[in-house]
Image 1 (tube, rainbow, N blue to C red):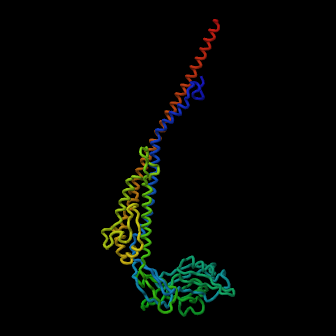
Image 2: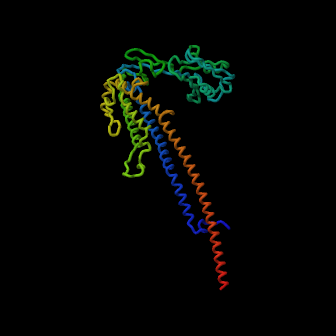
Image 3: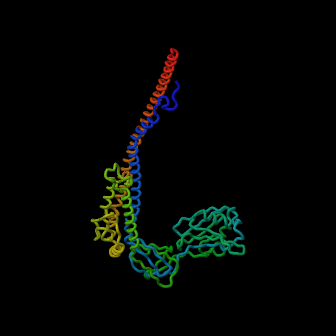
Length: 471
């Protein structure tokens, strides 16, 4: 007999709904696993959020963990002819400065001109030698006869990266000259140029800086010279207009000569340290906000079966709690060599309700102006094993490392998720197998019941026919 296409037609039973009910009951056993998967997936994401928040705080902590912040200075000049920059160790004070000459880079220009920049000057191949000062190696540049035009020579010099640059000057009247300028200022970087292999090119651009250059060759259109100045009436010469070795931890930048003596003032600058401390406090408080979000707890009604779904994914998590507790304990430096031992002494206090830091800007500014070095000793310490930001930095590095507690927690969650996935897949496969077996059994039942019903109908008809014949 053919199989029944619609389950239950043969038997008259609602086998489809019975089968659906069995399947729903079986799949309900997957819900606890699915719920755990959702919970652990949220926890894995939360660890990523925690790591990101710690990295942001780490950036601010590293920025504050710099000793030169607390010895920073600012500069001001009474003249635009010079300015100055300082390192963190510059001594505050005033300097009298007079600039009488700026450093210049030498420029050589051909005395003779050419009617264009394309016509070759040399009749044979040659080698141009450029010598700058007595302590630099000469640079030799090959110039072919075909490439000995002004443009060809210019390009050959510039492509050689010889410490000089060449250009073509239009002097008017359809005439052009070649100009060569040293990259470096100062008399020690004066040049000499010589050409071997072609006398015409030697006559056109040779230069030795002596009287033998009279007539042809090049002339010095800009003289190589050193900067000349006095600092507190002490004469100083330098090949550069940026002078970093005259005043300790101070770099002078010369722009022009001065009119008489001018003043450079170096003053203590606490603003950089103040800015770094404020950024550190803000970053710490942002981290506390993240802690709060990840451990949020919402009370549920008595008798409820589950916690509120808005609870943080790391509520009660030991990893986060360990970091939070240890971080709080690192906010003091009892071993500081200065009189400052706690952040409260410089205006940073902790709100007991939120755990966040509160900053008194006036108190911080006063502490820095009074004893910036002492504040540094408490916050930075020796930069290796002591100091608030130093010890916090070491712990952050440990927590965030590939072998740290966050990665260990993530690895544990990932392993659990993999196990849950295996459990879910095995249970789901078992349910699919059972439902296929139930469906096959129900189908057989339907076919059997249909066959029995058909036999019953046939026999009934036969009995009825026999009784009718006897009558």
